[in-house]
Image 1: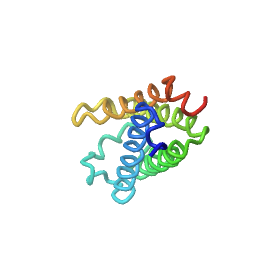
Image 2: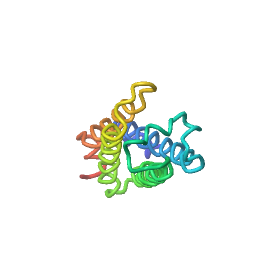
Image 3: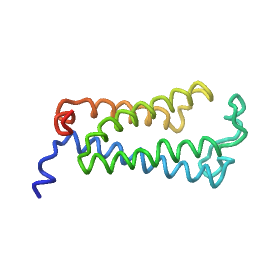
Image 4: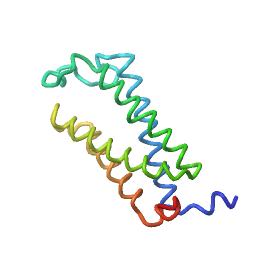
Length: 141
């Protein structure tokens, strides 16, 4: 039980945010890989007309790997208190913010549903919680 109580609440919040990103990245990525038309996620194909993509397969692969698998690897490292995972957490936050930024540049801001706003906020929160002194101290950074 000491293992659980020794973690600051800020570390648990970071773990939750990384979990949210990893699971949603896997989920969204799988759906886009299985159905590159985007219909399963209610994503009109015409959103891609100003992008280099003909369908959602490549974005789905990127989402699945970079914003799905990698965050879950980082989550495992954070849970096991690996120092490298703290750096990985920074990378996940930055990667998510870049993903949203590039998405908005390519297809424009889509307010309904507000997923760009939500995931941009998740990326920012991951960065904020990663940089908190209590989290840095816990991971001995």
